[in-house]
Amino acid sequence: MSGKGSNVMLLTDAHGQPVGLQSHSASPHDVNLIERLLQDSLRWVIRARRFVYDTAADSARLRRRVWLYGPRLIATYRRRRNEKHARRLNSRDQRFYDLRYRIERTFAWLSHYRRLNVRWEYHAHLFEGFWQLACLFTILKRL
View 1 (cartoon, rainbow, N blue to C red):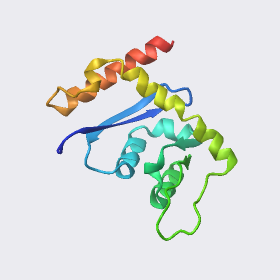
View 2: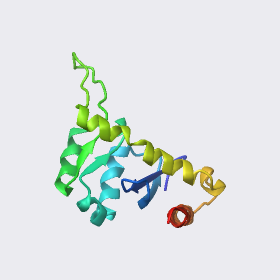
View 3: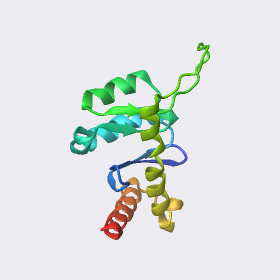
């Protein structure tokens, strides 16, 4: 990893249980990292109908690529300079986007582990290992 900081991409199921994890440098944009996460967690992605992400995933290229895997990408739209009117999610997609709190709740559960809040490890595989361990503890608590 290069750069100052780390970016953790977490894939959860509909109930907020972690099913996929990757850590990267904080330099690249989320759009470039989402597809790698989906490829690594392909068996979960194929079964999913919807993939919910925040505004950072508003990209036509990413929407097409996620659609090739099977699920539909639901992300809020960014207002672009050349648009006269802001785009909005339809009411059905908005209901699914409102359930995004489940993913945020999972990050809140994982933030209770102090080791994850500040990265003390020099090596990336150790940092990702602590994240995997925290995800395992989170899953075991929910059983």
